[in-house]
Structures are given as C-alpha cells and as structure tokens.
Image (cartoon, rainbow, N blue to C red; front, side, top):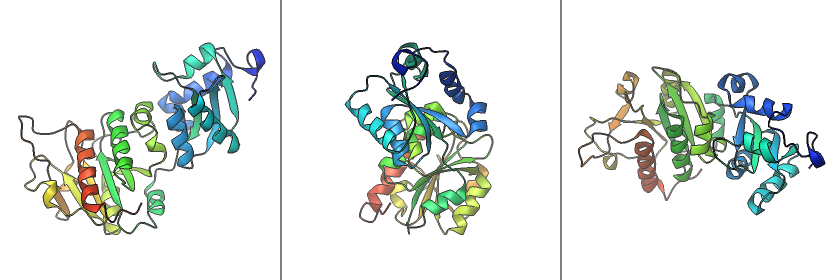
Length: 281
C-alpha cells in the first residue's frame, strides 16, 4: 500500500485533501451528488464486498489486525485502491467514537423497484419487509439486520407522509452491521410499492395496533410482504385496502405497541418460523 501525504506514504493529516473529500460524503447532499457513501468498519466493508458493491477506494490502517487484514486482502484482490492512514487522519475518518481499521468509499447500490425485482427473479416465494416513513435511520438499519438474519429476500423503504428512510445514513449502515449493503433494498413512494407488490402477486400484510388477528393466525409461507409503519403515525391509509391483511402482535402489558424495529424483527422471525422448511433465498 502506498499513498502520498505522510511518512512512508501514510496519510497522517486530518486536513489532507483526500481525507477531506471522503469526509464530505458523510453530508447528505454530498452523498446524493456523488452517489457515493463512506462506509466504516471491517464487517461493514466486508459486506459491501459480499453484496457486489463497487468500491472506489479504501482508507486502511497502517497496522491492521487479522480480521481487517483479511478484508484488506480481498479489497486488493478486487483492484480497490488502498490508502494507508494513521494518527489524526485515521481518527478523523472513523465515525463517532468508533475505531475503524477500514473506511471505504462505496458507490450506492441501485434502490429502484426494478432492480429489486431482478434480485428476486430466482425466488418463487420471497419474503419482503416494507418500512414506511422510517423516522430513525437506526431503526431502518436494525430491521435490515433482522431481515438478513431471518432470510428475507429484500427490504423496501416506502414513503407516505414524508421522506423515506435513508438506508445510506451512517447510523443505518452502522445499525445494520453493513447488511444494507448486501441485502437488496428499494426506496419508493407507498403507492408505487403497493402497485408493484400487486403486480407480482405478493401477499400484503400490514402491522396495525388495532387489528383483530395476530401473526400466528396468518399464513406467511408464500410470496409475502410485511409492512410496518412509523413510530409516530403507524402505516398510512393506503394500507387499509381490501387486499391488505391487517395483523397485530399480541400485547400483554400496558403499552399498546413496540418499537418499529422490534415489531418488524419479531414479524420477520415469525414468518421464518412458518417458512423455515422452504426458504430459498
């Protein structure tokens, strides 16, 4: 590894132009313009590689541990330019108080519904999770992590009242442990999402606090999408259609609902329980 900017080719300055250019990608407008994002962490960058993401360059610690070294070898094998960093530059690139041995500039994966459909082409009965108006990027990331763990085929961030959750927000990437980079994800307005699900013949299940039936009474074994709403408002009116099955999680205490990420995760694993003998991701 070699790069200008410090002793032995190692960048040490936190104001190095190359470092500053990468850090600008953490700004929302910068990411939108460049269609790139900054991904920090060994596991997260590894999952970006697993998901086939194109990586423009990677800033790597000058003295990597074994796990980081293995991912750095994969990056080098994929022809990714490696930029060694240390000291203030390495600390500045890390997100929050995190020590990141690898920070990569990654091109955002496609998030249109057509791309999601292409990823499902070989799956006759995909399980999908739809998150409408996600208020907190961390919740979206946590649901993506659960979706990956439960064998879901993809996640859709839908928008009804406001902007859809941003799967490339640093908090979403971090909460997902990088699974937003390997799990197929689409971002679209709610009407488009519902039309797309209907065209595909997918069952549609909507989580509602006041629903009569709970998840145990619903068959989730075929192609199905489970929709959860925002913490403040729940799902919008579009999910009250006749072909949408309302369900609830039984609540035995005083609270009437769970955190969106928790509710979505429980629903995914209940679906997995009923599908475990036929899941084919």
